[in-house]
Length: 533
Image 1 (cartoon, rainbow, N blue to C red):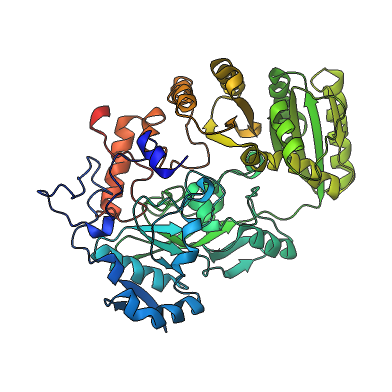
Image 2 (cartoon, helix red, strand yellow):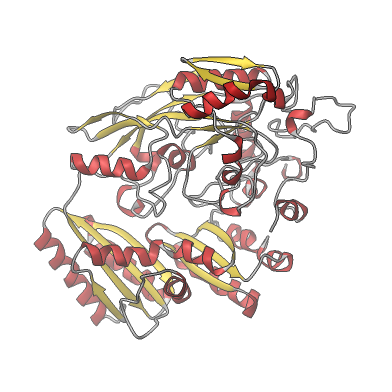
């Protein structure tokens, strides 16, 4: 589905993209001016803006020079900066701008700061000229990726990738926002610790993006969310002010807890550094891949696992037969560990502890009890780490398999555990044979990944899915965004999960911290709240 079609079907904003945001000036009498939104952000960015094609912000020797001559006349300077990695070649920006949608954005400028001070100078400059900015911190999901609606300036944090300090006594890591999650996992592994966050996309996602979306991950049932493990942040505000909250204390009750930058999706400030509490690495890890006859058995198994495995339970994931079938048919080198039968549901259980013999005996006793009680139809316990990794790949490979299968409509929902799969069943009834409805996710924390796979994107299919999926979730007091963020495509859907008074308070915070609305515009908050007042 092209960007034009997405806009036409209402999945993007109703404002025409024909004119560049930076070619418009705020003129209330002009038909080309950008209208002010009721929420007061993101729609009046063209005020006092210089022609974007004539602007480059160049990092050189720690200082920024504002080159107001034409790009054509500054070709050599631009090439020098590209070679230094400080200013990215626009030809390499295009394929990044819409991530999973494989669409091209229109940004002509991607900046790669190396320090917090450089981020500050960029934002100060952009804010003074009402230039919209989108932070580029790799994340694991579609919703909050770098969506450019016009031609916003992109700030790529990948060069800010240093570990600043690590305290082995407290287990507190301080690092820059551009650090790749997998690199942090490797660093901590060498120190005898682990990251409390683990994702299927750990090889590309950055910790700043994880924090900005409050990524949940695979082991939230054991280690909790980033709201709990993040101890401090350094954030650059829209006007360039540096907010130093990079504390490393477990306890600090002085004043308000300003952690709203966690999962703000870059709309309130750009996270540049983080301090995070990391748990010690425990060497006794066991993984079981189990089959269940029905969803009720999955629920009951979760309750039993929490009670009988207790402190060693570190992950409890589920996927249905359609999800496993996709993985087996679309990914190379994957096999069914429980052949030849295809069961209705599968559960992956991981335990992590400090006593290998005790932990394995405890897990085996639990599995025997569950088998005798009829909760498990079949199952296998990994005999080594290679088998454990293969089991995990069956679960982590579902998103990749879905993308290879064709068009896919993705929904990241938080629901009461007992109701989670009811939505999958209802969606299958609603769509019939026209779509392959797949359910999987983090059963341990009530997070359903509902995916509807079709040969191609179709407006009639979308009309069958939305707004039904949001209305159903709202009626069951769930969240339409469990861990992926609202981003651009769900910003106007926030009222399905949050009351108007709460959204108004969020909007007032946005106005206070980013009065010109330059940070990640059009995302997170609705474009109007009048109709919901």
